[in-house]
Length: 128
Image (cartoon, rainbow, N blue to C red; front, top):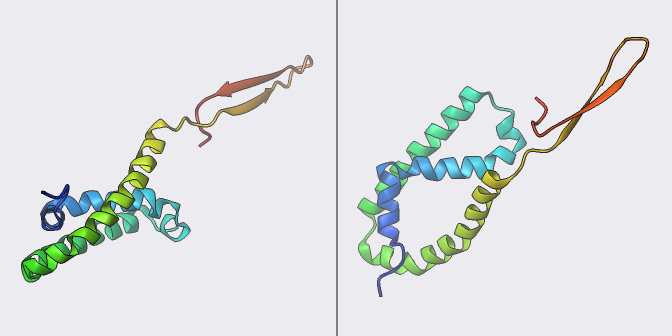
C-alpha cells in the first residue's frame, strides 16, 4: 500500500520552496503567541522567518541527498505518525483564525453641552 505522504516527497517539497509555507505556519500559529517574538521589530521578524525558511530548505535537501533510502523507509511510519498527529491541530488553528469574529467594542461619547447626553456606539471593529 502506498503511504499517504512519503517522507522523501515531503523533504523534497521543503527543499524546493515548501519550507517557506512550513515556516509561515509555525510563525503564525506558535511564534505569534511568543512574547519574545512579538518584541522583535518587523524587520527582525522578517529576517528570522526568511533565515529559518532557508535553513529548513537546506537541511531538507541535505537529508534527501545524503541519507540512504533504507533509512528514509525505516523512518516513514514515524513521520506519518507525527504528520497525522499534528495536522488536525494545524487545521484547527487555521480554521479558528479565519472563522473568529472580531470582538464587539463599546465607545461612550459624552457631549459637553448643557443637556449632557451620552451615546453608546457598538461596533464590531477591534480597538486600534
